[in-house]
Image (tube, rainbow, N blue to C red; front, side, top):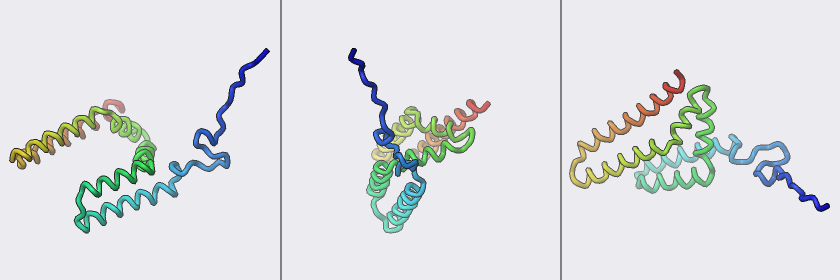
Length: 142
């Protein structure tokens, strides 16, 4: 009879090394200097008045290519009780959708000359998002 062979994936195929070391994107000795580099790039960009979109694009690119954002969320998730809740709330699309709609409305309002009202509106939007996050965390803890 011909038995079908089942293959068990080797650790190298899953991105894990066989020597017991964690992959580079899980190593704090690599990720911490990447975050220091990101902070320095932001500071230098603001100091030399570089366009904010350029700074944001560079930070986004570095963070995306190095998995720095996922590492930071992992560090936040280590905080007992509250950390996993914060990470869970930050991963909800509703929070991102509320913030994106706020930016779109602010963009349209600034174009029409309502810049003072935009400041009030953005403050209320940020307060609403922070309130949702705090309410979610308290609801899970109580």
